[in-house]
Image 1 (spheres, rainbow, N blue to C red):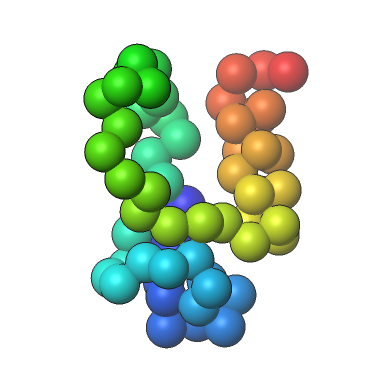
Image 2 (image 1 turned 120 degrees about the horizontal axis):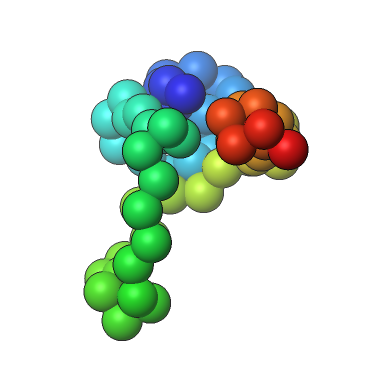
Length: 59
């Protein structure tokens, strides 16, 4: 899922460059390993990500 901060839909993410959510390559990390937040998804983008994840895991 491509997030382009130049598009209105992704302009509020806080991302500085075009980024990709690699939903097919999930990993878990301990909360202590998180240094900072890179951005925030809009409600619409979050819904799209959830739908894609559901499709990938077969739920």
